[in-house]
Length: 227
Ligand code: AMP
Image 1 (cartoon, protein in one colour):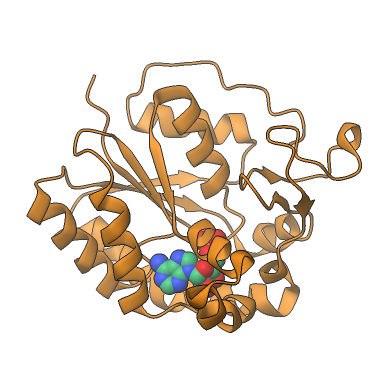
Image 2 (cartoon, protein in one colour):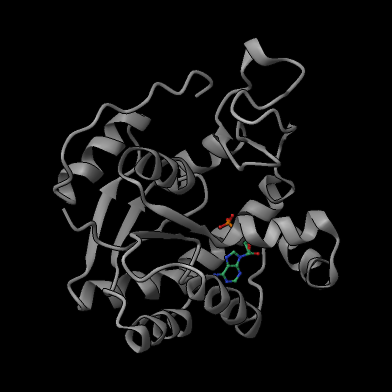
């Protein structure tokens, strides 16, 4: 079965990372997570990391030239027949055009967009409890009681809150989502490549909706103890 390439669109807290992880685990997708790649640069404190740190702390978008270089380089290293999930890109109309060009030149099948839709009030409540493994990026909605002191049960890395989940930064990121990323949703709708998912359910419910919409064969959702 040929799996479609996917892009995940949605406000922070909608479950893009969690659902991407499940699809990767169950069906063999490879994830390109732009936010995670950028945060890794910041954590490593390399040249790029120092350049973009302030932007990430404020929840603002990194400029397109940097994003283009990262995504271009990443795509070069992945075989054309490897099904992909791109999480966190495109976030602007310009980036959507760029993605289309990058896929076209290599004859990579154009992606299907999944829009994880979640009301603002639910987003704010979810983010207040979100924690993330600094190493593998696994997201925890509640701290796993069994794994104190804050060690990731998957890889043993340290778990902490994300600095860009602070309320004032969340507000800035939500504003960017509704002012800029919404045009990306429109773009894929016009191409008839948009699937809208109600992201307010449980992890398993949202996963089932996605599988149904993509006509994927049903596979058990691994139980995520800490979520
Ligand atoms: P995320 O983990 O996807 O929420 O991304 C975290 C942060 O990384 C965002 O708030 C932006 O500062 C930056 N970022 C991630 N993806 C992009 C992108 N496609 N374009 C510009 N900035 C991005």
